[in-house]
Amino acid sequence: MTALQHPEAIRHFQSLCDACEELAMRYHSPSELRLYADGYIHALRRSQLLDHHSQRRLEELIDRWIQDPSSFVGPDGDPRCLYEAERR
Image (cartoon, rainbow, N blue to C red; front, side):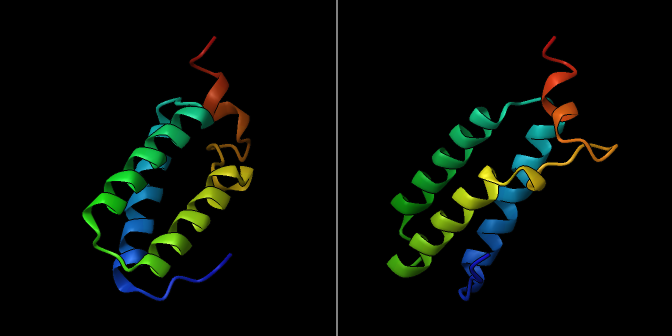
């Protein structure tokens, strides 16, 4: 993964990762996590807290992180249990 250099970008990345992991544990689907992340990133972009380069790198990193199945692993090591158990 691409490293973030800006301390605020790192804090936002960690905050968004923590929130997405919490949502995944409450059986939200990957598409719902994507919507949450898009809203977070949009609000961050509008606030202009990060410079353009840091914002773009954060967005790219979040995109890859959400698409990576190993980012969300269930308690038994199976990522499918996060999304399928409560949805049935």
